[in-house]
Amino acid sequence: MRSLAISIILRESIKTTLAKAKEIRGFLEPLVTLAKENTVANQRRAYSKLRDKAAVAKLFSEIGPRFKERPGGYLRVIKRGHRTGDKSPIAQVEFLKEDNEVSESEALEEASS
Image (cartoon, rainbow, N blue to C red; front, top):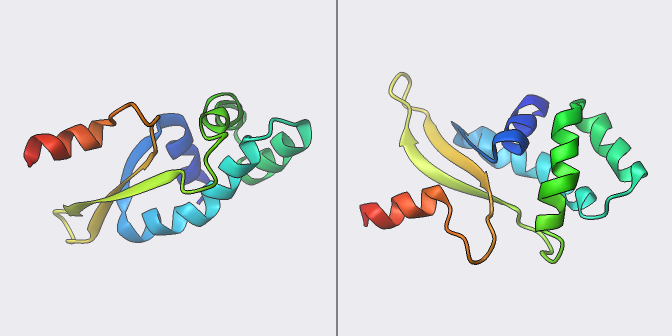
């Protein structure tokens, strides 16, 4: 969970299996809620879960302030078909963008429609 959460924080969008995508929400969304209030205590609590200074820094400097007014639901899980090798379902996990921005996945969905 830790490495998957770090990847999502640093890249803001990843592809993984559907089961992992659903499970990571319960791990990562409370950390984003912590990051909404930038205190040393909250940073230390987030670091104890993640153990990555760069991820904690980005969480508190960019991601937390972005969702300051939002009460929850910071991640979006989009189903992306099946993996070619073992046919396991694949999903894309990404942070929600600002209300006026369109994410890359939304642009792809609109183009394919």
